[in-house]
Length: 371
Image 1: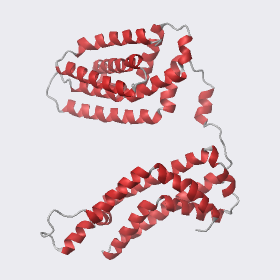
Image 2: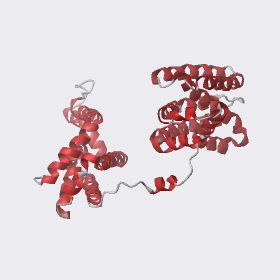
Image 3: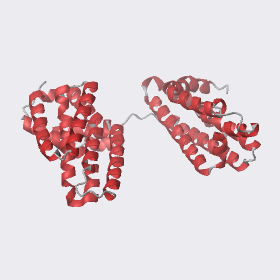
């Protein structure tokens, strides 16, 4: 396409997208290419030549023949497209890319639509090449309907992307905060809530990944609980320990924020007991989803699991006051503590070590708070 806008978009957005995601794209492209053309059967003599050809085409033929695989592939393509939207939108918000708003608006809407269609086409080139290959295979093997559906789906993704870009480029640039940020800006934010705001708004992705792991582990715990014949059933304590360990990165990032951005709070005359209680409230707020699941499943009998989870997270959190911002050392200590507490569950002495762990965590905090 010979429009100047298309060349600008290619140099600024397309090249940047491939540069940012080159490792992932090379991996998937190499995997598909190897599976289709360079992976040989174990013995070339036990299959006729036509069957060997079908073996090399197993990926595109499975895509065309199986509705489930086709839908899964469509979902992957959609996620890829959404990822490109996110990347382009974030790039447009950067100050060096603000000239694109004025450059694009100098063209009429029809020309812009063509350029944005070309932009998404270039970004979607990896799966467009695969879809073109499967389209040809579909015509050869008489999968006409599947080939047509694939073509229409890609055309839909490109068209929706072009319309979305058309909307972004033709609205006035607005750097104002979102409605939620403006609403929260009017609220009072005491000291005890600053770390919580940081977790929910800055570390939201880390928090979401951690909660996903927690829900998965609790689901496994409930499954083993239902199928367990042991009346003591220590398996849930092991899962709560694993959930506490999965929060280590979230705790590390919150501690890093506290030490780097809120270090001035060390000069305030807050008693250490009060600061320690704030940390406990933060830990309780972080594990509210897990507490809801445990209470919903076990009812009032869940108090032991919740208490064990909070004490384990507390010792992992207070350990940072001794180690500080050394991530590798912190992960090593988390591993050693996990093994030690895991063995305590196996030997049924967890209720002896958990109160001791709480006392030790406060001693670590009290000794290293001003460190």
